[in-house]
Length: 328
Image (cartoon, rainbow, N blue to C red; front, top):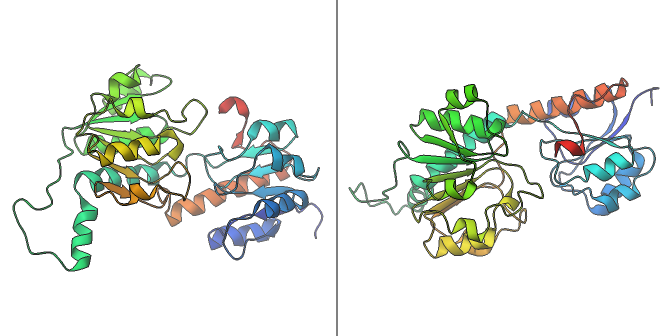
């Protein structure tokens, strides 16, 4: 191995241009076949690597970090969310953590609008009818959905993605409302024509569509719990493209089944790939397989950010996207 080349272990397959560039720069182990590493495989990888490149499918907790040798110095996460990594314990052990913020903003906002339209305009029901060959022809009362122009959109979490959703929704004629830990600057609020609510409870009781765009942290776990979901109007729709843990999925499923909420569009789930089977059966729900950021352009940009973080670290500098516990 040439002097100075870092040993890098990547836990999942990445776009070909990203893998090729990594091979040029580092002593890299690529993942083949593309399946999540077991806990034992992750522990072994952390013992032999200078840098680990994990994804959201890798849970790196205090127990795993305790098994890491002295060699591991950087966890360069492929993705913006780091709730699957115990950042505080990593820091205590002298391991830096970086992520890839900002890359998925536009793609995720696009998918949020797709889900809003998918649920309100009953697109999956129409698609299923066409694919089954059971369409009897046009009818004035068939597959009636709702118009989104003029409706109130309540955005929970007004960071990069929340603001990108607001811009798109304004173009569709929706009225923008939001709840955030911090109120936006007046000029940003004015540009988005957004109304701030200090009280989440008061906001969601008045909205036609709720868009979840906040990260998963201890303070946002089940932020949309059974009590809050009961505040929604029966005609309201809930869309989530952030983290499944923000919604009490069992409570949401019960209310959707009972007709107490009109519909939901979900790209993320509380237990990852283990989706409540009762949720799958509901006709008023659009379920997607965590594909909000799934564009080839976005995936390559994420890889480029990972490479810059590793290269900057290798050059003896602080990775530009380093994550510290105070940020979470």
